[in-house]
Length: 323
Ligand code: MTE
Image (tube, rainbow, N blue to C red; front, top):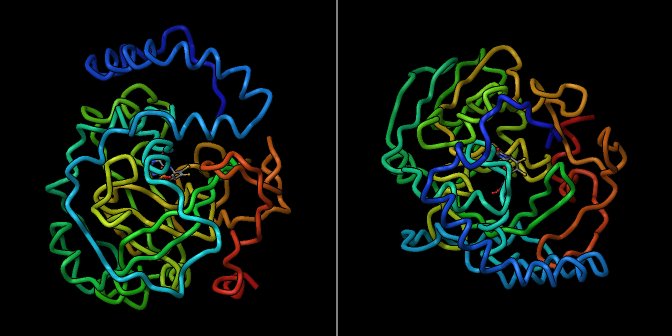
């Protein structure tokens, strides 16, 4: 999200990447170099070519052997846009803990251990506790919802997520009346996440926050699966937030801690670049990013540019929160 020229003393990418991943990537690059050469011209001539090429790319790793996790689709939360193919949603990611290269996240994250996984619930709650993610999942009402996901970088996908309403989790966690915000934090495992080692200028671990009104809005969801199985690593295994009316960076991945707070918590991108990213980060086509327009977005599946809607098209559910 930030364009940054590395200093001479910073770790080169090949040193920051596990050797096996690096060599695999080299082999993949060689295989596709010819195709890519041919394609470069086509992409310039026709933006849809990028989407076509992505559809031709090998299936990303991380999808094999994922345990099934099926839940009835809730017809209230669906969209006219077609669901994006899973190979795209699992092959084009933002997950800076691993790498900033969207098409490499799946490769770099493939050996990450997302189970067993402990979740901590703390802060302004009746009873702070820690429990295994699967024990939590067993206690929650699972459903499938098809949501649009709109990144602040102006690309979007449509995903069938499996998870539970965040409001059910909040009820279960029993916050005290003093709780006004919910803060969430991602893992800190630099030995497994090369991006946490090589990009030491970022304030890891990743953190986000919502007001209690946002956290208990019916759209906010804790996602534990996609496309009928548990989440692959690259999409935020084993549990992540999805708040579809906000820019994608609010939808924090691989959460280890939920903390109810009295004060408004900070959020990762606002700390990194306050002039570019705010706390609320509601999708708004009328407010350009300082470096690009937010009026439209690229559908990653087709390469087509489509108009962006206020609150990502979810105004009827959330606009009242901000009046
Ligand atoms: N969560 C963590 N922990 N680290 C990240 O880098 N990137 C965010 C969000 N959650 C990010 C994160 C951004 S910018 C986007 S657009 C979405 O994850 C992308 O989710 P996806 O890769 O599943 O499509």
